[in-house]
Length: 109
Image (cartoon, rainbow, N blue to C red; front, side, top):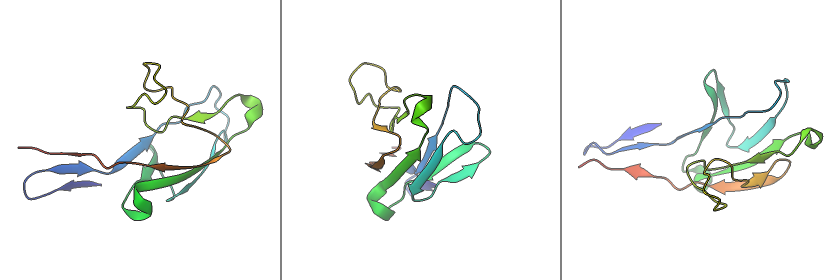
């Protein structure tokens, strides 16, 4: 959702999730989330709104026999301090995880 106020300040509340795997088997991931994901031709979208205090409850089911599965919940931030932003293991699959997102607003003067 894009919002613009009377002073031309804009805010965006859309988050995009890109999933990749080493193999292209149907059913690689099973995603359960609250709020529910929206699937479109462009990918999988999670709406982070004021409901649930800007949080998403995740459960991603994955067959561990195929290797380790983890989720990096913010690819713009290096949470493990290794200098690489998009490889953090914020949580492992097959676990419940509650992630709170901070709204970020940009202003125009």
